[in-house]
Length: 171
Image (cartoon, rainbow, N blue to C red):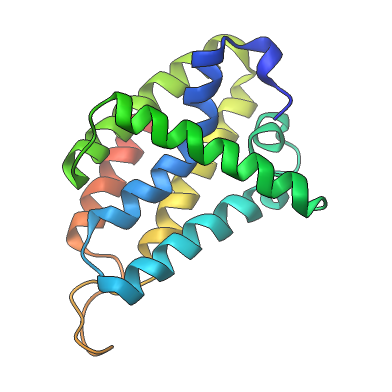
């Protein structure tokens, strides 16, 4: 994570942890059971890893996402990022899915405000697009409300509501 020199520590924590938090919030928005939740968490991790490739021209995203060409460093970076995320959630008293959704919506606003002062419009737009891509991939990873794989919906009403709120904050 080499972009921190342009940011304060707290600014960088917000900007760099928001993508992971978007995935976590979307995974927690619906009730997809153990298997579905596992699929959503894997989708979140996978979408964060592919964001680096999909946004190769965005130096900010390159700085935030782990470089998978060095697995040991990528694991170390991912663990450090997880510790930051968990610390921020604990310090903010997040205890429920609703708390998490409110927290991430505020973080999206904060992250965009920080980036608009420090980055080009193209970089900021790429970041916002990446956040929505993560949310959408997680929402589509598993069915909500199914029973033993039957029925349910791919993009639940609760996920659609959170996605619409994210789009509104990032629009």
